[in-house]
Length: 344
Image (cartoon, one colour):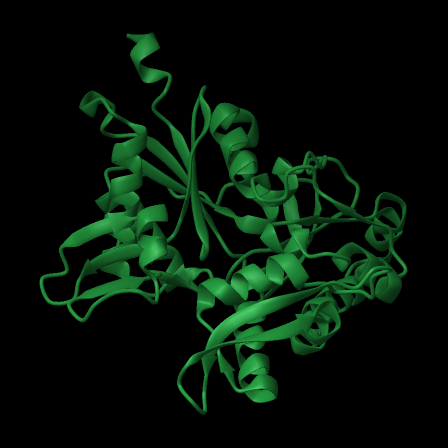
């Protein structure tokens, strides 16, 4: 019997851009874009994850491809719940695993109402109990920081919808700041820039690709350039323009400034003892945004602190939550506790 229970508990990093699912004893079993495609009228599910992401910006009239999470919180409850249910069913092929304990990550700035929506989605998707863990805490555990010790650990988690900055000590968040400027905002800034400077219309997918190939936060020794395809706003026809990494850096400057500012503000509010620890240990970057070229350099330059990128920044949050599932008793104190169904 004990054997059949082992694979049951799971941790979910319900992200704006990607959802990752970790199953106890088996590791990360799923990593898919948080996108759902459904019929506009009947709201019948057509595709979820990678298949649905391919449809963004390419759907006919009767079909919509949506991202049910915006800025790290649930924007479309129904779609989120369906997506979650679909992902859980994909991970748990056998039905008698039906009622797992679930740890779900939320941004540190979410309101109690938003938090309840996440829990509710977990219960609707078939969880027995839902525990909440705050993203920066999960990211710190996943990045291997000693969160339970009496030393200051600073983590900057840049996801799709939010950037979470937190200082952690003794298993708790000492100072946190959550700003809704992250990967998605960078994409939007690139779209706006090309529209203004080159009269070129781009889709979200192309903007994300440009960010990954040309994006940078700090001047590079070897600047890059590429040909970018979009639709000409004047003629309405497809057109190609050459764009350099210098231009893209200029395009996302304001958003980068907001992220750097959040780090500065958090350092400013950190108790002096912990600030001293951070000076020694440095700031750890996690999340997809940590992969932006030169972001560590930029933060080092602007804060004077050592900055390290986590080993696997895209999975830090889910691995941290997964650790809570594996060592549930030891790590239970970092979870936002509330047993069973909510009382309301």
